[in-house]
Length: 341
Image (cartoon, rainbow, N blue to C red):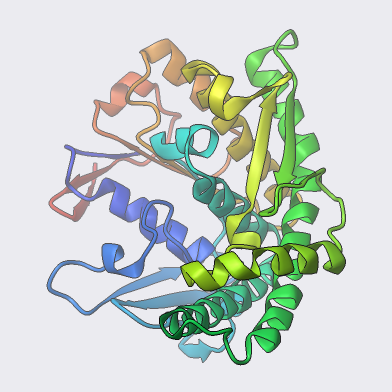
């Protein structure tokens, strides 16, 4: 249990573990938010019991992250991932259900990497293509001409975009069944069934595990070509897709209540944890202030629902109210300093 007053650094500690596990923050979209004011870069290092791996990520304000395992710099993102395994729960998880598509895409991509670290390399390749293709579109927009070389970048976008879409749909085919069972456990057998599908950037909705053809992607690119030139931005691709979550016959984003949305978000995280436990070492659970807003009975019920394994739990409340298991360690965070109590 990691406890202490608000603003002392509890969430930063969990964020550091999540960054080592996922190669991304659960709350910051860009590196400049993660780097402390007045500094050029951040350094995160973690040692993994059992495997003996020591993973280091160097995060600059701008530019490419650098990763090392046991002191050796690695070239591919996937080589640094999979050593630390963790699933994060936070109050912001409500945004997976209620928020913008970007949050749902991030949830899918981070979870897919947890199950298959090699997926991270395909995500990185797509990000590179999107940056360079969009830069070309912006440059051509200022001159009012068709971008020279756009056909080559279209081929790159098709190849890497279809790979990422395939990775997402493969992951969702496993998640859809698992989350349905977990949600039924949490919400009760009489609750409406939870269903997942995938909306492509050109509007088609496909089922988890389905295949998306190059022809459909190409047709969507051709249709958007004029709008892309006018706006100077890539409008078609996985970076604009969305995870569709339905509760019964209704879209959960617009129709689920606050309580239903929290249950769905928790079910999604627990399902990822269960899936990850079948593909390797059981992930560490990171619970960031998810019990503080609950009364004692509900806090106990939540902790009882979560599978037994290593867990890092933050709270600003008195940890005694949670009825921690015998032997649980308590760490006080005060102005970024950790003291075991």
